[in-house]
Image (cartoon, rainbow, N blue to C red; front, side, top):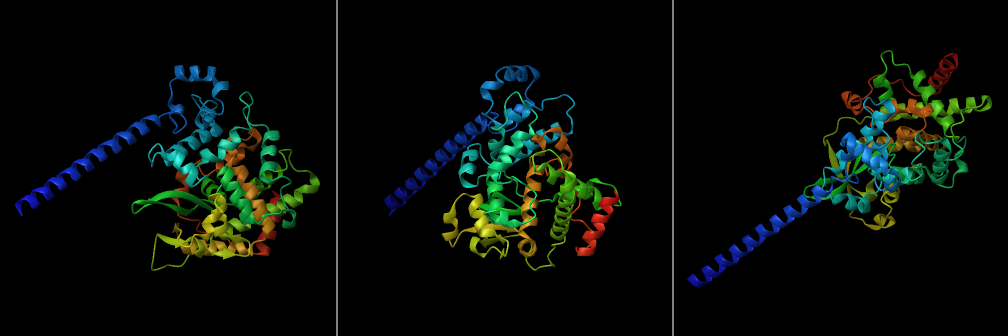
Length: 396
């Protein structure tokens, strides 16, 4: 009996020692990988280099042009007193780094395979390759080429029949390639010891605009911004007289759509916070299908066949209300809205005439977005409201 107890004790001791050794080896591996993450490929330290290092880096810019997104952005916006668009570009890098730093350094490769396009790093990997080393800021020809490649040429649309894809298909393509996420943001989070896909609400440009202007917060100024952005989707040449009315009507419809989303506040529920929901149980409507959208963003159609795949959804009631609004909105309005949000997303890299969009970018002033939970006094959407908005914009 004593010999059996002795053998058991020895076995437990050996297992404990092996566990300790494994823990030490794992810690050393993660520490080593985190140290390697100081390269510009994984974080924003290139924005914090000294002037000497910056000068040395700029001398070989052509050789490393497409090696790192951070090199690309920081080498063009390294200024002692940066302007607004330069601040936004550097803030963009910081936001990406903050997302990546919550995981081990080697998670960048893991995230690329698990949830592409969540990080703006991935979205602008594509975009930075279209920009030459000697041509900052981006030219409108390069923007138009990118928009055509993504299916956004000839905006805004008067009718949805001109497209061969559904609104959620186009949204998935944009989010997969550029990380726009105009309606929800997909991210990876640790949930009870495992990594799961999370769906969060994103701030709308309307909210950011209303928080940045003093009372009374007139929507006419925002309508003019949306109208100008829609005209730029034709290639940056501006709107002709015959197209002005079309742009104004499309802009008014977008403003109404964002107002409806802002009002999509659920009633008080018994269950608060995030909940795990199966992919197949996500809400659907006439013009929106969340399960198919997630499969497009993940670039994996087999997800639709996995019945037990779950997502961590924040405010499921709000998502259901937003889905109902998407179903009641015309496809043409949704297509135009996706094009508008794409320009807003790419604002830091657009030519100077588009820098008025920087104030609407989510990373431009995130503090102001979180300062207020929601707009408190948004007028109800109706045809008379749209007519009044158009009348006031014409008078303006």
